[in-house]
Every structure is written in C-alpha cells, then in structure tokens.
Length: 227
Length: 227
DNA sequence: AGCAAAAGTTGCGTGCACGCAAGTTTGCGT
DNA sequence: ACGCAAACTTGCGTGCACGCAACTTTTGCT
Image (cartoon, rainbow over all chains, first blue to last red; front, top):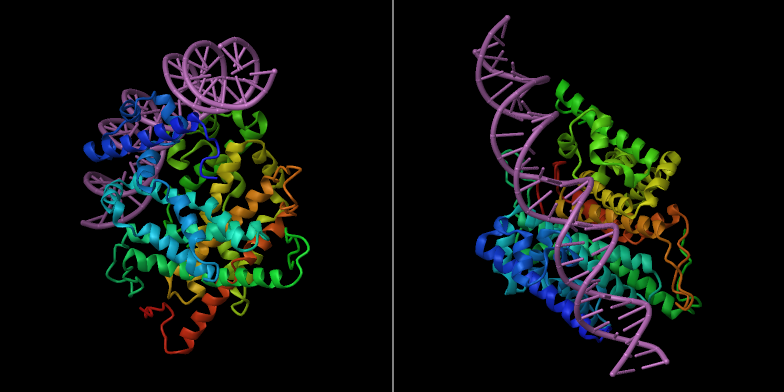
C-alpha cells in the first residue's frame, strides 16, 4: 500500500520530486519568491526544465508542495488512526487540526503570505486532501455511498480552504460596516468553526451507515437513494 | 445590484465580455475546441489578444463562460426567490436543479465533454457560484456566521462539482470490481444525492439561526455574534 | 544473461498568461 | 465647456506550460 511499485524507478521519482520541491523552497527563501525562475529550480535539482513540468504543473506548486509535503495522506492517515467509536466529525476535526497547526512550517508559511500568487497556490493545494479523505470517509461509512463520501470530503476541503482564506486575509475593517466582521481568531478556532458547520452532515451520514449495517444490507453499493 | 456603475463604460465592458465568450463558443463549435487560438477569438470579437486576457485568464474559460453564462448569479437569485418558510436545504436543491438541468445548453455541453481540458475548466467554473451563494445563505441565516455561510456555500459548490464529475465521467467499469460502482444515474439524481448529504448541515445551521432570532437579536444585519 | 516493452528524461517548438508602459476613452468636478 | 484623473485598451517582452518525438533507463519475461 505505501509503495506499490517496489522498484528502483519509483525511488528515483520520489527523490527528484523531493529534490525539486526542496530546491524550490530554498531558492524562494534565499532570493524571494519572485526572483526564482523555473530553470533555476530545475538546475538546482539537477534535472532539465522540461522535467520540472513533468512533476509540477505550475511554478508555485513546487514551492507550496515543499510546505504542504505529504499533508494530504497524513490527514487521511490521522483520521484512520482514530478509534472507530469516535464520531467521524470529531475524528476529522482533530485530524485536520493536528495537521494544520503543526508549528513545523510556520516560518515557511510566512514566505507564502508574502506573495498573493503563492497564497492562491497554497489555498488551491488544500484540494489535494479530497481524494485521500474520500477514501477513508467512504471506508468508515461502510463503502456504501461513494458519492456521499466524495461530497463530504470535498466539503471538508472547502471548509479548510475557507478557514485558511479568512486566516490569511484579515478582512480590512471599514469603519462603518456595522460590526459584521467577526474578529476571526486563531487558525485552530477558524478551522473548528468551519468544520463545525459540516458536523451535522457527518453525523447524519454516520447514522445512516449504522442503520444500514444493523439491518440486512444486501447490496454493498447501496444504490437505493430516497429520491 | 444589477449595474452598480451606471456608466457607458460598464456597458461596453459587458458587451465585449459577451462578444468574447460568444465568439469563443461559435469558433469552438465550428472548428472544434482544439483548433481555436486565442488570437482568433480576439479577432472575432474585435479586440486585441491582450484584451482577451483582461477578461478571461485562460483560453478555455471563455468557451465555458459561454455555456455557464450568468449561472452563478441565477442560482443565488433562484434561492432568494423561494419563500422564506421553505427549508434552506430544499430551496438550494431546487434552485441548483433548476439551473443545472435546463435543456438550454445540453448541446453545448456535448462540446465540452469532447475535450478533457474543457471538462476541467467546466468543473472549475462551478466555484463561481460560491460567492453569490454565500451571500444569500448568509442573509437567510441572519447574517450571523459569515464563515459558516461561506463553508456551506463552498460545500454546495463542491457537491455540484462532484455530481457533475461523476456524471461526465462514467466510471469505466472494470469487470472484477465487486459491484462497488453505482450506475450513476441521471444528472438530477446525482445532484439530489450529492446535495442530500449536506442537507443536515443546512438544517442545523438554520435551526441555530432561528434560535438566535427568537432570543434577543433585533437588528437584521445580525451584528451581535455569539462570540 | 538477453531482449523487448514500459516508463522516464530531455530538447524543441508553439501558444499562452501576464507585467509594464504607452496611448485612448470615459467620468466627474469646477 | 474644459480639463484632469481614473479606467480601459493595446503592443511588447518575458517566462511558462505542455505536446511531440527522439533517446535512455528500468523491468519483466524467457
């Protein structure tokens, strides 16, 4: 599961991927993110510029990838690691908080906030947790509703994205707004609030899954919507 | 709301925007989507190629925009048009179905499915409904939780996206999968299923909003957050 | 071991996105 | 009516993404 292609080939691929993203991060820190050309990153990693684009489809992606690294799979793994009796919503919230509040990369985040382009790329990167999350959610829901799992996973990604967005851009308070703006606290608080809005959906899905497993489920694809 | 800058300037801007996207669609239908250069679209619309990129940030965006047009604002308007006593979740589902199952653009959708690149652009375009939706949701929830509204709106967008994705790509059934694959019915069914997964979250949010309005929040802009 | 297919890398060419600095049009105040 | 400032367009230059067709490396098979 971890490395299905147990080959030397895959090793090299991961090696160059790591080399590329670390080179990208190092150069971005040294010169500032706007003074790094793709050619520089490729050269620093020892590959051709063309190869760079076989790994990353945009210039910012490499830099952002150095920060987010394998966060995608780690979030999913963190969810899978929780005991099965915990509410799925809680497991998700804790797993997300665990991965997004590590002080490990707070200095690198500073770099990202410098450039709006990097900021966008960083927010876009949260989409990467969708697929792993959909897998674990689907598993915990009994594999019955793949679409449901995908929707919920996408919802989580969207919530995380919204929280990060609000955290990165403190809404420039106009004086006469009338107090609409919530002070938008710390990142953990924002993440918690954002995910809390989805919690009822998870509870309902989990409950349905339990009901199905108690009754006799004849088709594991559960293709019978209430429609 | 409709035209805030009541000027001749804004009129011209919208005119060229429409000219661009219609030219893009026409050319794509005539020659096939891969044989349309940006320069061609610009020329057909009577502007310079550089101006094209002042309106659309990618080549596919113009073609897709011709299909989705002002769907963003229409979904939001459709939600706002429902009476206030309808469940928010239902209002949303109906509004989305109303806008995404119009036969108006089924032939144009055929064009989009031709090219994977256009497909991606089309899916990405669903993100555009987030902001208008967030506005109406926030309004219907009493304006108290902007973050919540944004999360829910993003969730709807994600659900729509997931449904469209599954609809556009029938999962190529491998014979030995074990019956996991749902036959992935019609688009309305998929949309309904996808949105149904989020319904509990909307119910909960709505209930909280009602509780708040019964207790002493008087101003309709809801300037008194629960902290 | 040897060989053929699969996977990966690289150079090249094309089209594209976008910053920048003119030049042009529109809106507004006086 | 006049003129200035803001907004929009356009040409140019640069860097980038990516398809394509060689070429090299890895792998599985015999």
